[in-house]
Length: 219
Image 1 (tube, rainbow, N blue to C red):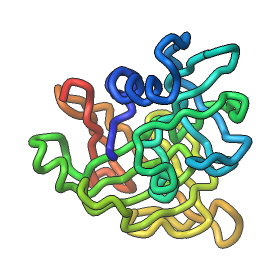
Image 2 (cartoon, one colour):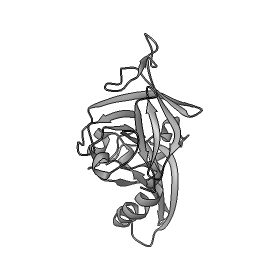
Image 3 (tube, one colour):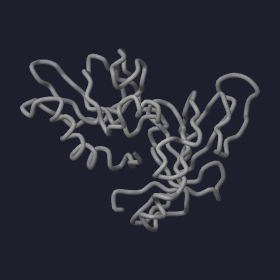
């Protein structure tokens, strides 16, 4: 499940969201499009307690409010627990709103200078920053399991660069070892090159020459 964040509110909410929410909640529920982050305060069948999620839709029925959560932005293990669905519905009473993290600027980046063809896009390595705090690296769009998965301890934005921090080495990624001890021993810089064509936005990961791209809505 590799979906650009730019498509979440539009494509995901309109198609998958409408189907998923209508299945779980009757069609006469009052619904609202949303875009905020929250942490689960109670474990459910689909999501562990303490999972940071992105909510894109809410619905109220019989005085009780529910939220549609974008599962595609979660880590591989949590996606498996959720049954590899694109979205799940949980009660908003089990969610606590939080500030938008710096890592939200990043979703799924594909290896390469820019988008050219669908075949090359699917075959390219993928770097995914998840809402539940992982950076994961995939061989291509066909492999569901990541080659590497590292828990992030923090993310910070400075100008057009997002810095990701972890306690352990981010395998397969060009991070830097900046401290010998503590939770911020490794840092990965992801630069928005502020270069966009009709199909993709350019990024550099680690070094300027290590190019990745994010597919835009026009693709």
